[in-house]
Image (tube, helix red, strand yellow):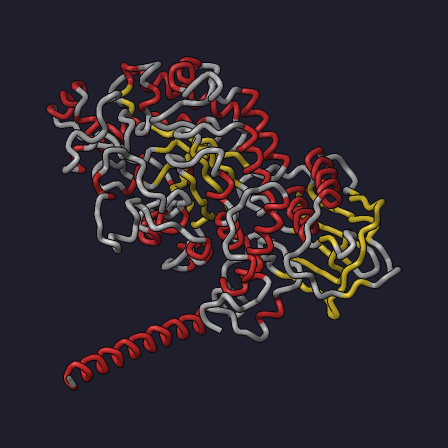
Length: 597
C-alpha cells in the first residue's frame, strides 16, 4: 500500500507546510505590530498608570518611599468645591486601598529615608467649566526627597493627576503604604470625548449602579457618560411637564429616575469630571410613549416582524413596535415639553436626540401616513418634518444636537444636510466601521465613533428573541457570530486596537472628537453590568487618551496585556467586578502566555 502511504506522507507534508506558513504569518504580523523587545519595554514599569500617560519617566535605580501616616493633599488657594471633594476622596482612597501588585515591584525602598508628607495641587483656572474641549492636562512629580506636586490648568485636569498619583501607590510586604519616587508624568488626552453609553430603556439600573459606573469611568479618565435613558421598552425618567410618560411607560413605580435622582447623578458625575449627555431617542424607538399618548405613536402594540422570512416586513428593528407620527400635532407638543425639561435637568452642552432606525414598515401601517404618501409624500419628508421642528428647538436651548448617523446615512429614510447644519450638529456613527466615519466627516460633521464592529460591548451573546430556530443546527462550526447580529464578542484587544480615525486624511481626522463604547442592555442587568463593561472599556479609555501605539508607531497591545491585568486587579480591589482577561498564571510568568516569543 505504498500509494496510500505516499498520499498520507504528502498530506502530512502539506499540513506541515500550511502550519509553518500560518506561523510565519503570525510572526510577521507580530513583528510589524508589536513593540520591540528592547527600548520600548523600558516604558513598562513595575507599577503603572492606566491609561498610559502621554509621558512618564521613573529615575533609575527605581525607588519608592513610604507615605506618612499624616499625609495630606494640599489644594491650591481659592475655592473649588469639586477640587476640595476630590482631594478628600483621594486622601481617603490612598489609605483605604489595600492594593498589592500581582508581581511584587522590584524597587528600592530606603529604610529610615524620607516619607511623603503631602501632595500639593496647583490649578491655574479654578472656574473653567466642565464642557466639551476643556483642558484636561496635568503634570505630576514625586521626588525621592518626599515632595510631590500636581500642576494643572483646570480642576478637571487636576482630578486626572490625583487618579494617576493613586495608581502609583501600593502596599509593601508588611502592609506599609509606598509610592513611586523619582517619577515625572506629563499627560493630556489625545481625544476630547471618551465615553460610555449605557442603555436604561431596555433594562432599569438602580442609581447606585450608575454612580459606580461613573466612578469607574473617572478612574479610567473617561469623561462622558452618554445616558440612553428611554427606548421602546420603557420610559423610566420622570419629567415635570410630562409625568404620564413615566407613569405609563416605566416598568414599575420603583423603576423610575426621579428629578432628585437625576440631580444626584449629574452632581456625582461632575464631582468626578464626567459629563452626562442625556439621550431621549425619537422618533423611532418610542413604543413606550404609547401608553400616555397613543394618538402620537404609529404601529404601537403590533407584532414587530409580521413575516419572519421577510426582514423588509419589520415594523421595528427588534421587539417593541412604535415610532412617533410626524403628522400628529401632539407629537410636537410632547417633544417640546421633553426638550424643555431635559435641558433644564441636565446642564450638559450636548443633547442627544437619537433618530436611529426609523423603520419604514411602521409608518406605512399608519392610515394618516398612508394618506399622505398617496398624495406624493415620502418617508424621508416625514422625518425631515420632524427634525426641522426638533433641531432648532434644541439649539434654542444653547445646546449642540447629537444624532445617530442614520438621520443622514440611512438608505431608506434620511434628511438632507441642510436640515442639520454641521455647526450645531454632531453625528454618532455605529455602522460600517471606518466607512461611515469617513462619510460623516467628509460631509463636514464632527463625529463620535461607536462602531458596532469594535465598540459594542453587548455583542456576542446570541440574540434575545424567542421561538428562534436559528440555533437548531448540528454543524459544529455553524457561523461565527453565535446568532448575534454584531457577533462575535468584542475582546479587549479588539477594542484596544481600533483606530477611530482609520482611513481619514489629517484634516478629516480633526473632526473626530472621540468615541464611545456602548452597552445595549437586552441581555444585561445589574448582575453582569461591571463585567460587561470592564476592563474592555478601559481598553478604549487608553486608546483615546494616549493612543494604542508606542513611540515608534507600532501597536502596543503586547505590553498593554500585563498592564491591563494589573489595572483590572486594582479595579476589583476597588469593588468593580471586572472580568479577567487571562489566568493569574500568565501575569506571574511574563511572556509565557504570548502567542509569539
